[in-house]
Length: 152
Image (cartoon, rainbow, N blue to C red):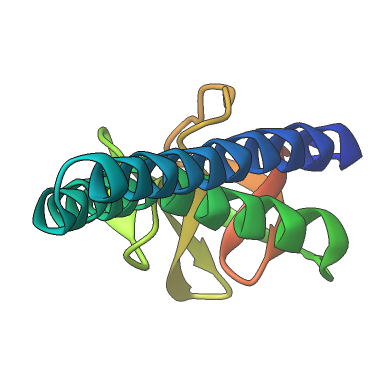
């Protein structure tokens, strides 16, 4: 399997670190703004607080939110139900695409029982080369690939 409990533990530690850093940014900006409001002027303290909140929102959007989305993805793959399917690989996207407004995935188009479907490969993992027009066994959770093996 390409995903295991160690992956979940690693992303959990990373998520805890960035949330702690976000909390530190908020607390430091609050302390600085209170200090400026007491020592200089209330308006300048308010401006410092607005800047601190803007920095915190920027940090949330650029760092915390993507890590949190990846944490949820890994958690679902590790703890969720999966099933096996077999399909003939028709196409593999050359570049990752942004799906679900969250993460980047490679799209794998397969034919399963004369029906085409799209499976998604996490772009953060190193996947083996997937050969076109070959039969593969996929272990999937929803439409996300957890594991794959070439059959023929």
